[in-house]
Amino acid sequence: SQQGEEDPQALSIQEGENATMNCSYKTSINNLQWYRQNSGRGLVHLILIRSNEREKHSGRLRVTLDTSKKSSSLLITASRAADTASYFCATDAGANNLFFGTGTRLTVIP
Amino acid sequence: DGGITQSPKYLFRKEGQNVTLSCEQNLNHDAMYWYRQDPGQGLRLIYYSQIVNDFQKGDIAEGYSVSREKKESFPLTVTSAQKNPTAFYLCASSIDGAGTEAFFGQGTRLTVV
Image (cartoon, rainbow over all chains, first blue to last red; front, side, top):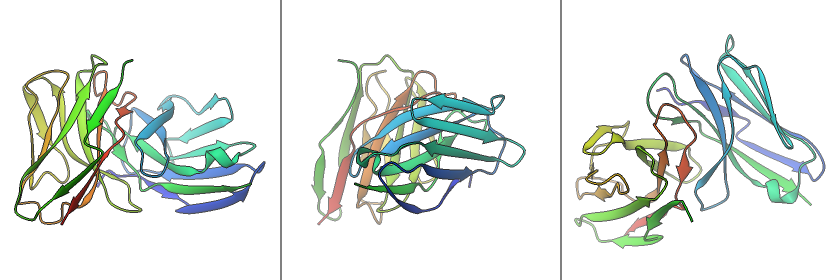
């Protein structure tokens, strides 16, 4: 399977702390994306990082990509209760569609 | 407003019945996708379409069928051949499918009763 794997499966932190989630994948990619899903809802795109980029920022989000290790990390700084959701990485794996990981369930405690 | 709309939000099906889930987008996107999500799991690709009148099987296409007669619409039929259809179904679209940003609908939760 080309599906990625997120780590940890679940993460619980206090409001104000930083949250770090990791994603590993198996094949070469053109880009890697991170999505957020609130319970029972559709996914929302957060950020896309291309294979020739190593780091990207968007607001409180910081994404890194290490193609030699086939891994990526998503850092959410100064977390808020509203950040509570599941976070998924997705890769194109050189194909014309997206392959999603299993997700990290983040809980931010007020 | 531009977006992608799935209907209905909740759907109940009796065993042995076929049921069709609707997905419509007004984003002028070429590519559309159907994913299945089981509780606490990631998304698994059922079918995808890069262009009108063309579609490809994903990882778990057995027991499902699709059509793409119009650019805006990509309905998914869950047939009686699908042995375990109870799940959350998500439709998505993207500009050209080449790993570009995907826009998701709000999902349809299908329950077999």
